Each structure stands twice: as C-alpha cells, then as structure tokens.
Length: 353
Image (tube, rainbow, N blue to C red):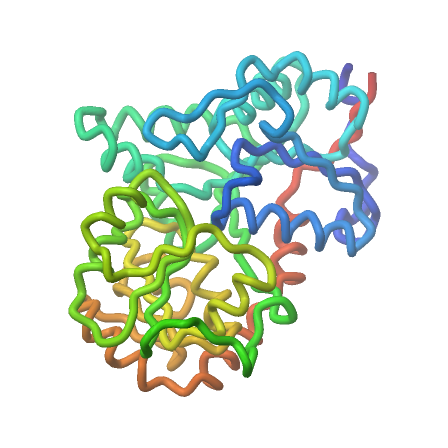
C-alpha cells in the first residue's frame, strides 16, 4: 500500500466525489455529542454523493475504558484496520478520537506516508484532571500535541478553542463548526413529559466532568429531568431522588423530550462546543448555562439563551425567553455549511495497494 499522489490541481472535494474513512473510538451504543456529530456528518456527506465508511470498536474485541465503562476500547485493532484501509482505499482519512482506534490509524498513516486529519472533541486535560488529579495536565497536553502533531489539520469547533490550543503549542488548527438538523429537532406541540412543570432538562453524559451536580443542587420549582447515562448516574440518582433520570434517548424520543421541556440547563464548564445546546434551541427550548467557552461560542449574546455565573439566575431568565426566539436562532445553524467546512479541511489523496 502506497500513496500515489495528491488529486490533480483544481479538484474540489466539496463537489468531486471522494471516499472518506472516519476512524473513531466513540460510537454507538454511546449517546453523546461526538457520536451524533459523526453520524450526522456521515449522512450529510452521503447526501452530497461522497462515499463514507466508519472504523469503530463495533464488532471488535474491546474492554471498558477505566472509570468510564460505557466507552469501549478496541484491543489490537491495527491489523484489521490496515486491511480495511487497503480494501476501501479512501481518498481521505479522518481520525476523530485519540483512543486505540485513533492511535492505530495514526500509526498506519505514518507508516505508509498517508496524509490524515484529526479533530479535537473532548477536553482531555480537564477530563483527566477530574478523574485522576495526580496526573499532570502538562503531560496530557504533551500527549495530545504528539498525537495531533503529524495531522495535515486538526479540526476544532470554535475560534476561541482554536486560539486556546494554539497557545498550548498546537499547529495546523482549523475550524470545523457544528450545526443541527432542524427537521429532526423541531417544536412538537403535543410533546409532553408526565412531571410537574416547569421542566428543567439536561441531556448528555452523566459524568463528573459535565458538572451535573451544579444543576441538580439548584433550588428550582418543578422537575429536573436528565437524559443520558454515565459513570456518575447511580450515585447522583441516590443523592437526588426527586430528579428524574430517564436513561438514553435518541431520534424522535429525544426530540420530543427537548420539545416538552421548559428550559435546557447546560452546567458543563469544559465542553468544547455543546451540540445539545443547538438541539434544544431547535426544539424551541431556551437554554441556561454558565458564560464559559462552549455556550459563549454557540450562542454568545443571542436572546435564545441566558448565560450567568449564577446558574439559578440563568434558569430564571431562560424561563422567560420566548420559544420562538430559541427556534429562530437554531434555524441559522446549517449542518451543510459545517460539512463543507469539514471537506475543505481534509487532506485528500488517492491510496492504492
């Protein structure tokens, strides 16, 4: 297997059909923003006429990730992954995560001189600090610079994250923003949840780095509802018995839960973007959050959300926001524009045996 040269000058991967291999450790049955982003990206690429294939832990021998059993790490996937690359002969390889699948794909690309791109979805330094406080954050950044360094481009969701990572010594950082499917996530007039109103909703991984307890500890009227799963769920259910933990939801069930809620509460201080914010807004549900990087980048000072260092004040303000303002903001966030961004960042090269 060897590279045979870049596509001819003037070839545009946004219009000329290419084969794209997306390598990711995050995949179903996980329910999180990374998985939904990659699934939506694949559908949109296919709708544009491109051929997409995923390399994931699914169907491979895997073990639970330490402290986070919902994430499975494929064991020794390199041989099978190398065979997949030979058979599929992708024009572009994108490595979405830094787990065992990502590490194997990186090694293969470097071995054969195949250009590749990466993306930065998760704040691993914050993630590691929350779970393993004895591990040096500087060491984590060193690992991430090593992992992403050889990539033709490292894609991030926002301009502020780009500047932050460049300050930590990362190179070739490019923007790949996020959008929302406004047909799937939409206002649903008959949507309801069987709980006392107002309903305060949170969707996502129930884990320490998501700062869920800051939401659960608020003194709010009505009902707090959580959708998702994660390592902190069991302990939080015991500590906050009045909250409703509904487990993972996808598709129409998830859209109806968003639409039935009065405010979407996003307590995370570490997310790089927060796709769930856009999903909630698309369903007409205003957002309450802290004024930190993720929410600030997504909504800024738009009237669709309330950002405040006092999360309870943000919730009270968000409850007064007209639902049509939330929907109107989301309607401006096109997934197709984000997909074209992704395509323009790719390193496109023909690969053959």
